[in-house]
Length: 448
Image (cartoon, rainbow, N blue to C red):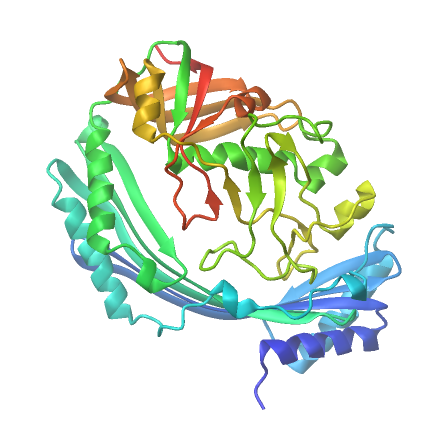
């Protein structure tokens, strides 16, 4: 009988106990991916990869160790367990290490309701190649496009199974189908580029390749002949394409690892305002057909919808069992892990309260300022929240887009920026971080 990821995890746990572990958990991930790239209407690269990765974490008292492998032979499983136990015996003690109590683990999971895996057949390579060709042709057809840097299509199917000696055992499958295109306009030092990339859990939900290519081409043409803005203080509108980065910085600040280390500007802000009144940030791990959805976390705890920020006020951290124990709290079921590492806290799907006005409405209201469509580099002090990032986009004058902007720097205080955001109503529902365009007043721009 061939090994399955379920039988592999069971065998790893048996091997760990035989090797002398007090407790253990095991993760197995089987993945198959296919990617196709074209250039100039010709196939440039075709790649298919299939793998099965296994990971084992063993605990001896309050000591732990992790090992991983891609070899699933029985002898390898036994060697992994013996090595992990030997490593754990030499590891330092950590009083917060340990599996979930049996009463904490997820039970009666309705995984089918999340629709994480498309039941449609895996696309043939010829189908992906045709999508890439069509995206490239559509981008090239946009007047002013001089070349296509890349056009591609891909598919990924992943199955994972987690089991532990505390009684938890569960797994699920997920798929991702994608198409992308990068276009270039201009010549020599006057070249500009932009892109469009779309990915969906279900292939039927993916936009057509012509639309993706057209958007890549049109975005590129809009960036032609950029200028630098005058240095000064201006309102800045973060386009929906990049606005989630601001919320991502907030999620990093409330991550349990940063809070435990004291390396977060939000460490003393529980119960205080971090967003404007009326705005909430909701964790939503059960949204159907979303890449960040999951029925249980990396420690086997059931995930649930909850408020991270409620009516502007910070309401909770992002915790796994270890960081929760260090803080004297309960896990928020946000543990994530790979086969070679222990669990650590990580946020999944989040939704920011949308505004009532469109992006165009906010552009009209901002008068003179910057619309940011791409970010370059990052200098953010996680302890103080000092914010500085390179940006490109469009200069706005008299409430209208005037000309493209390149090579400027935005600076400010991230905590102050977040407390002043004004959301639009253009968040896209298929995104794991469902965040609309965000207007922030009074940021410093360094240009000419």
